[in-house]
Image (tube, rainbow, N blue to C red; front, side, top):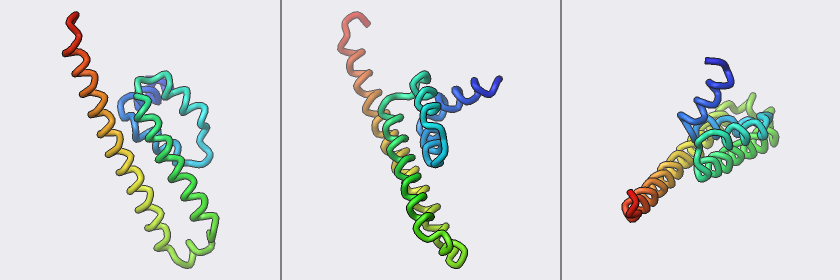
Length: 118
């Protein structure tokens, strides 16, 4: 499977996680992620939650590290704080994604049950 197909398959299969991870890095080309997400079957709610959480992590990391980068050499425990915040935001994003997916599935099930053509 060529690299492009693997990339699209990874985004469609995992949904939230690859978008979140890619947006956590400050130099990731956002246009590429946006196009890949738009072409894939990722829902709008999953995309928005992943972008908001990923950009929040990126901004936090740049500000946290950029404020006192020499402090990481003298106080390496700060890296643990940064990793904990990253994990916490990923976990919250996954919970929100699951909640919205559950709501989307419930709404689609209700509408298909109400449709007399089905």
